[in-house]
Amino acid sequence: MRPRYDRAVHSVAILPETPLTAFLDRAELGVNSYHHQAIKALAPRPCGDGSQ
Image (cartoon, rainbow, N blue to C red; front, side, top):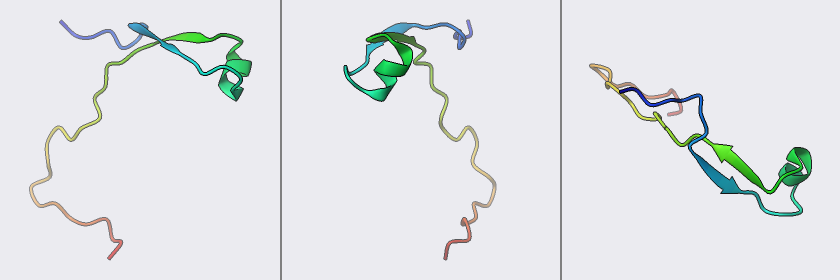
């Protein structure tokens, strides 16, 4: 079964008196916590980013 990325799965509290609270006009928000932020397969020959 594939995770549902388009649904809120839990709530988070937003700190009061912050720009986000003022913008959303609420103190709690439903969020999705499914994350796929990893390297699935490394390249055959990794190379640098050109910074050195």
